Every structure is written in C-alpha cells, then in structure tokens.
Length: 374
Image 1 (cartoon, rainbow, N blue to C red):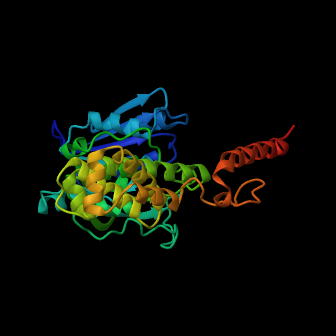
Image 2 (cartoon, rainbow, N blue to C red):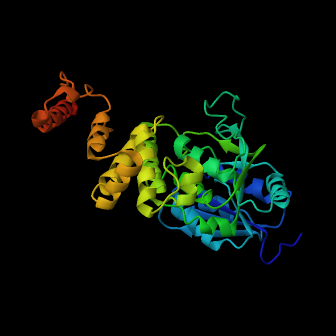
Image 3 (cartoon, rainbow, N blue to C red):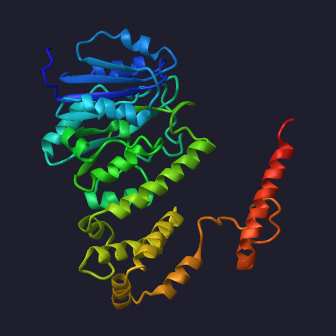
C-alpha cells in the first residue's frame, strides 16, 4: 500500500544503545494495522551496534538521523519532532513494543472526540527477554491506569501527584505538540512531565484503558531505580513544580487550585494566591511547595502594594511570614543525621548555627578521607 506524500502519523524513535531491543521496536511499528505513517529514528550517538541494526531495515517509511555524539534523550526527541510531517505524532522508545492496532485504536478515539489534543494508553509490562511481568511486579504497575478527567483536574493531579501518563503511549496532534514547546534537555528523568503540564494548560487529553504498548523493564532503563536516578528525579520535580506555578495563567490556576479571595484584581493578587497555596500545601514533596511559596512571598513583601493587599484580603503580614519561615526547612530534613551529630540542629542557638554546620562538614570530609583507599 503506498504512503501519502504527507503521512497521517509521524512516529518518532530516539535511539541510544538498544541494539538488542530496537529490532522488535521497529518491527512493531512497521507491522501496524494502520499503514499511513513515517518512522523517524534519531540515534543519539550509540556506542553499541544500534546504527548497524537500524540500517538492516529497508522500508520507504523509515527516515534516519545518526548523531556522532550523545546529546541527550530530549535533544534527540526534539530533532525527530522537527522532522515530523504528520498530522499526528507518536513516540516509541527503542526498547519498547507496540500492539499491532495501537494507532488504529487511538485514531478512532480522535475521530469520536476531535477536540482532543492527545491520547495516551495503559501499558503491558515486559522484561528484558520480552516475557510478560507478573501483574504485581513492578510495584508501580498500575500507575498508568488512569480515570479520565478534564484538563484542569489533570493539571492539579500532575503537579500534586507526579507523572501518571505513559510517554511512549502517546498519540498527539502535531500542532498541540509544538504549542506545548520543546522537550527540555536539562531534564533527564522528567522532560515528559514538564511537557504534559504544559499540554493540559490548553488542551484536553484522553487515556485509553487498553494496553497498547509493551513497556520493557531492564537494568539500563533511564528510569531504572538507583540512588542517582532517585535524587535526580526529586530535584527535577522540584524545578518543574516551581516553574509551573510561577508561570501559570490566572484562569488555569483558579480552575485547578481555587482561590482564597476571588475575584483576582491584579497580577500581584495572582502571585499572592499562588504563594499562599504553595506555603499551605501538605502532602508528598510539601517541602518543594513551601520553598517555592516562601521565595515568592519574600519577593511580594518587598512591595508596598502587595503588603496592603496581603493585609486587607488575607490578614497576612511580615510577622506571619516570619512564622512561616520558621515552621520548617527543606535543608534540615533530619536534624541529627550527620557525622558527629550529637546535637539537634534545630536546638542550636542561631549565633552558633553556622559554625556547627561548618564543623560537621569538616568532620564529614575527614571521615570520608579516612575511608578512602590509600
């Protein structure tokens, strides 16, 4: 069957060191029941045989880019997106596989709900050999089983609960993908979460309950659990939360998180609502929210107009800020967890606090040097 000069769907596939997995990924796309597609593979400087493996596939629908150096997954994805010509764009990781009818199912959903910006799906989990994983393993196996909701509810839940949308399951209108902006290559773990937060601020999405992709779990997954990955994920989420709230429009904030003193009368009023929400939030990662809120409130209190608005509408003043600043700190998670920490940091007189922190830092370095091999 011939392919139209401008295909309906552009499938993008960033590739990096997945020579043993990429044949099944490519085959699962070329074998789709929906034929009118192009497959854009961007190999991001693989050090294994990925490029040679990719070159064994001969199909007029395949377009390839082979980078000499590794730029990062988000950069490779952005390159593929820039080459996409289809009305819709889908992404397949080079170590995953698609169900044969994935595109047909999702395009049918678009046909019935033409105002949607994107369609996601649930996943089936497989191991490095392609065998199904036990339904209870991994422990997060139900993370992509999501009830559908409106975009403001999605915005609320993504920011307060984290990512629950499967990136390689997406089929998205190319115009919507471009509107949401490029993937941020400064993020290794969560560039997709930042993208979804941007997306639901203007477009509705839908999650199909069908398991339309096979998501492979193996030791070299970008998301494979290890201390560096976990720390990086937490740090990236903190930055994403802060930037999302700071940049969010009045309409999206009000509809997703509510207002304490409506209606909004100015940009300063919006910033106050955001700061108070962030400071008051309780739950997972509440330290991120509080830190972002205190930073914003610190900025606001430099303005006489903001101080008047805070006092008149919320009964909030600089003394309230002092209290909020003293309530907790993300930098003292466990006051006693430090080398030589026989004194709780929160009980040390302020005038001695800096010296005590420096002393513990020196003790830590000395202990580390003693443990180092000669």
